[in-house]
Image (cartoon, rainbow, N blue to C red):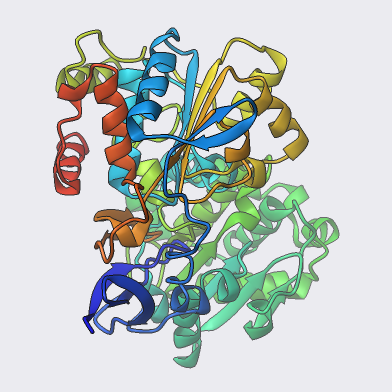
Length: 510
């Protein structure tokens, strides 16, 4: 019997916990703690503990599938690649769209971004961040210049006051919740704001049960109370911040008085007062939030309000402080960083920036150029275009996404997918979206390939191959490179290892 441990990173939430995969005779059979991780310190939640169970599922895809007469039939890779290449080459620039994934590696996402813009010449590429933390990317980038968590997960344990809003942290990010409880054990105050009392809220010292959609009102009310009492960090504001006078003019309006805020939000006046005082006077206050504030029509405003509160109180740039956006999926931060959005290349270099477009065009060396330097469709807009302007987008290439489960209005999504001339789905299972595909490609999961993912705290960590993929399944970037080669772009995708993909991506990413 051959038994070994392979250290890797959990494929579930954005915390980025390390774990060992237990490999017996070449197959993953379990997990074990990895005690040297600074993120989870050897602890795992139930999701990570059972992160091995799906790997060798009998339902895994093992061969390419091509739909003939309404039914899938197994095909060889040569047959599948030939069909895909012929169809892709038949479309004009911007007639195709691509969906990348928060479940695959940085290398896979970079390959998809390069394929979309360089091979298909399309500006239409997006992924599930559009439905969860796109508000974070836009809001935090506007405030701080980077759409990511400002502090590390470990810093939370050093906080003197933890304010969680719009996140059921203890259930969705249990190991981050553990850091909150470490802070509380050391005497930190714990404020929880959410329309419903979750298991996280039951551990709080102060619970603010506000009406859904009144996040900005609550936060502005707290800021008015802080300014009215002179609790703002004047030195930090003077040295580090712009726009304080404009902020003060807005939040000091009568509509954000304690009485009005209480009337709008439903939170008692005394609780708003207490929250504002605890937060402003602790000396090290951290805000944690997740999709409870981002999945709104005012999501960007909600995020900006969190940033404004931290700048007002000077709770940035020190342990135990910061605006801590808790990403939902394991590599949603990385997918955004890799440019799998319709408005940016890697590291949020804007596609409408002529210098950025020239930089990527020169580096990639596609003989016929790359996609125009224009913003493309977000996934939500894309679905509307498919139903309202049939024929504008003829082809869709989906990697590791399942819009038939994750997107809003599934009847609308189904209608949209049925308008496509050609749909390619690349995944590890035959999911609900794959049922509509013309070609399904079997992919390797996190335990079957090397790569990196970026956690919610911007920590880049490795996946290490623990076993071979089932059947004829391949790594995502390998599949993308094979399609590119079949279309005559093999020279632009010369990679042999994940490390080579990483090095190219890093060379273009400041």
